[in-house]
Amino acid sequence: MRTTPTGRLGALVCAAGLAITLGGCAAVPLLTRQDGRALVTAEELDRLGYERPETLFDPGLQRKALAHRDEIAAAVEAVVERTLDRDVRIVGIHAFYPYRSVDVSWRTVDEPVLAASELVGLEADGSVLGESAVATNRSWLAIESAVTEGVMHMAHRERVAEMNAYLSATYPELTARPPGMVEYWSGRDPVISLGFDRSRLGEGADVQASERVVYEAYLEDRNRTDAEWREILESAGVGRGHELRVHLMLAEPGTELTEDLAQRVADDLRSNPLFAGFTYWDITTLSNEFVLGTIATPHQEISVWTNERIADWNVDHRVDGGYVE
View 1 (spheres, rainbow, N blue to C red):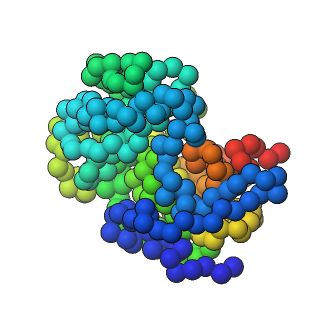
View 2: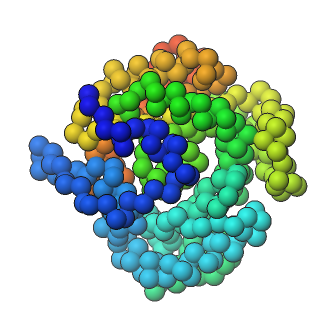
């Protein structure tokens, strides 16, 4: 399979942050499925953006919310910045729900990169109900989880870089999701996601308790060294286990995503010492085409996942958002 240099994982991972400007790129021609529905490449989807009214549950509310974007952003920033004592920027506003609220995704402007979303209630004209609507609509568990994941990535940044480098060198046919998509899904890294293992039945409350310890340590001192954060994570996560989520995408549009490729990557990572020490693995691979008229629905998506107690892999294969039997 031919892979262009700009399609390689390293081109995204090794770029300065995620600041890759796509807005000025020439439009990528649409691809067409056999049933006539249009597909767009990941690059084109990133250029189009993820706030388009026609892709969301309530296009009318989305248009009204976007007209009040600065006001909504200011309300969310006020709540999150006061809570975390960090500068944040608003990533997107999305009318997902059958009621007058929008989901507003945000991320911090410096490390540790914290990313999550807040539910904001709106007036009929799209203006904000009030700052209290932002502060009370979202469970603070989302904030605690965002802090924990952000701290994990900072504490293990060298290992994450090594993982990315290995994947880039070993699987040139695969690449990272585009920057806008990573931010849309509140990602900290284009490829790697880390967290406490939530797959252990009955231990969800314990994971929340571990995240609370990390969150309180963050509020106490936000400027710890990577080594200090590793010690806190180790202490907070005793008995919890850790999960590794890997997000990859075919580098070339128009190529077929196969379960064989997804399985091969998963088997490699589970046995590779570089990726050792986890109790849950989820390797998700996307095709490089997305259904036009949706937010970010891949034409093909294969998720291969398991945990320490299961010898075999579970495989979820979706086409245009529907599961393949």
